[in-house]
Image 1 (cartoon, rainbow, N blue to C red):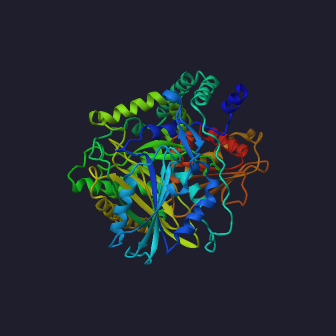
Image 2: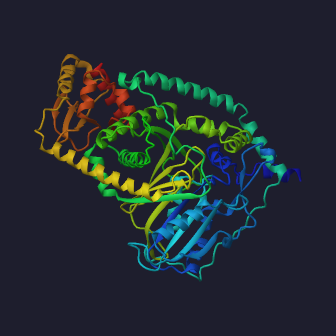
Image 3: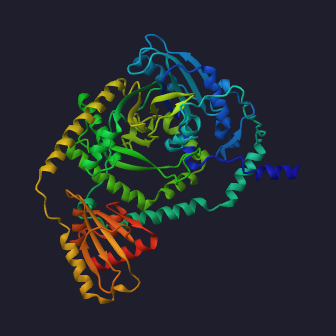
Length: 604
């Protein structure tokens, strides 16, 4: 018997949830159920039994869909995932018909109602509602179906959701379920008893009893690094700080959810990205900022300070997309909502995202995750309950005003039972004090921007969605006009030319440069009407610095003309530019290190 207990305690198939996962669990309440959801529109009529068989045939690929949480007695440790011996697929899939008039507004209200209901924490934490009869939804064929899926956030984040999507859906338009193919049997392990759970939690603690002080020490060291890194920034950055205003989005919420969505073209967004020399995320933040500003102006509730957005960042490594857990960190970005001009607001957001990345890298996503892992579950669970019960959010400024999550999805069509998936919309949980979350999801050339809120905070979420579309159209008009002005400007002499004069001078005055450094290196200058390419050829007995390109340089550096000029003027350090993402290097690790060391000597 004792041997059986030891074997069960050491059984690695029963794993505790992580600290970040636990955060979503102890935030869960009847008023704020912490599940995420998706509304998927599927073209044409799908047979319900075939749909259910498709799910049943793939459940073995996603183990947690048949597992439930078991709690450690007295909350002395994080809950564990364990097979649910009472799992029944029919308890998780519901079939209904869309009520008349079967239009988009009816579907939106139905989805909000389903999303408002908490999941049963005693069962596997997911549900699917199969909605038939989409007969009057604009741009959707009559008789199509909708699939409303809910999954608790303790199980999944945005990127792992994309991985699960790849399991449940298909890339083959001809793939259909085979009714004769047997379903893999489910043989659940027995649920662990209280003694086993207490013993497993004790073993986990003994494996790292100094976890909390070690994490605290690493955190302090990273914070010191962050402070020193901030001192390296230019003066304008040193004087900046983030102060969060209190808005109508940061009050106590109601249990009833509201949501609205805007659908944009990904190709048009990429044109704006290229014209502004920005990222897709910068464009999306600028569009959302414009929509938020319009909404608050219409309510006469726009604060004089800019709103602050919490921007989740996936810290998944390549190959981890399908792992069912939360691997996210967060970055705070000013949305510059106090700036009226959309272009100036866009440029301010770009600058803030650069600063945010610096601070995020300095502290480190791993450190942030370790902090969450080190917090005792019982203490955090109690704190979350007290915070919600006494509406403590009313007595302090919020850490941020809105969360804006951007998850890239597949850019090719998906199918289920041979029917094409037309659109996918993501809904996300809201909390007291944080009553607006904007979820951005791209699929097959479309981008859906979905705002989730509650009936008290934003009863008119459809109006907010219209403001998002207006913001996108306004920004597109102004950015394209700015791009045309750039095109007609007379071609100017690159600002970075003096840098290459300095490079030539360096090689003339340093004849021993050849030591350990050979080959051809390339520098690509962007931000001009045409990319300006320079070669540093160290393959001969003397260095040759000239314009041009080579097919396979040992290493290459790509940087904006203005930023290279700032490096030349010693207003920006090479190390800073690399941390900030202002330069990109390609080549093998050793060649890149050698090239960077050479450039550091040249600009010293």
